[in-house]
Every structure is written in structure tokens, then in C-alpha cells.
Length: 277
Image (cartoon, rainbow, N blue to C red; front, side, top):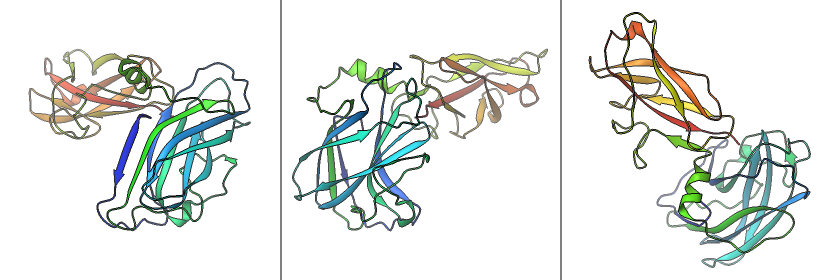
């Protein structure tokens, strides 16, 4: 969901666990400079086959702000503008925002609306609509943007290259765009070739392009099986444990223990990096 448009169709009736939720979300970056407004404005268009109260949850730096909006007419695209106070407890020079539109939520994640809370988990307003209750329900979003200040400007579609670069601050991978992390595929995998005189075989420093935001979570995958936490020794056709080292904004390093490999083995690994908010 990149701010342009998204259509969600519920194909079957789903019972949401009391501590569960279904949502669609988007990361929203901002400049790492001091901001002067005391509020920000979330604007978007939304339409659904189900009218009623809906929840939206904004999260940043371990805090959350949950608020609501109304869908008044079924199957009609409506413009929503929500003014949100900035979190007085957050660091103004750092961090991003994640905006989650709640489609269904269990009773135990409901919380007090319209106040920043020191809780980084998703939250919902009590009595919110549930589009998963009945098969065939739909909801659509378009032109979502989060801006500093108390007014909403016209939505401007970003150039694809700019859009991709901003998304790359939050998610990068060695894999092809359409490859799922847990599926097999060698394209883009990183190679290490162990030496008999070293304790570890290093994949070297893997650099992000562009640099990512802090709070990165790195997961390594076997290119042959898609197994998480593993690399692939192609010489012996076996998966071997892989380790992650030195995670930063510009990259990370990874290695395998030479007890799992022999000299001159070809060992390959895929990686996925996801930033925090």
C-alpha cells in the first residue's frame, strides 16, 4: 500500500481472535529535522460496503495514537481529514510513522482513543466495523498522505523512482521483487567461499542502497530451500546455520561457521532487511 490506491475484498467469513487484528498499513517517512508544527494531518479517501466507525492507528518510536473516522454511505468514496497532535514524549529529530487502517480487531486490543500511549502495538477503537465478518465485503483506500501542520494539501503522485527509494528506507532484499523470502531462488544471493585457515566464512559487508532507517531487523534465508536463519552450501547440497553481525543504517555483515563447511565450498545466502518505525 503506497498511498495511491488499495482495494481489499473479503472472500470468506473470518472470526478474529480477541487479541488479533487485520489491517493494511504504510510507512511514512519524514525529514530528520526539527519540526515546528504541534499537529499533523492525515488525509485519505475511503469507501466500503460496510458503513460505521473505523479505526486508524499511528505508531512511532514505541508509541501509538488510535483514532476513528466514519464511513457514512456504502460503496461511496469519501474524503477523510484527521488532525493528530504530535507526540510530546517522542524525539523530534528521529523516527518515522506507520499508519495502520484497521479492518477488523479483537476486543482485547481496543484502547482509549485520541491520546498518545507508550505502547507500540496495534490498537483499535471500541465498536469499530469488521469487514471480515461476512464474505463479499469490500473496502478501498486512495490518496493517503500524512503531513505536518493543520491542513491537508492536494495529493501529488510521486515519481516511481522516488517512491521506490522512499520505500527502500524501510524494506530491502537480495531477492528479485516477486520472490517471497521463504521460497527457493538463487538470483541475487550473496556468496562466501571458506578458507581452511579461518574459523568463519564471511559474506562481507552487505550495503543498503539507499541507507535504511535505524531499528533494522535482518533475516537470512537459504536460497535453495527458503529456510530462515540458514545459508546454502551448494558444494554439499545442504543448508548450514548463518549468523548476522554489525547491523547499521548503511549495511550489515554475515557469516557461517567453518564447522559447517570445508575449504573452497560455495556457500550462498539471501537476506531481507526491515526497518523499525
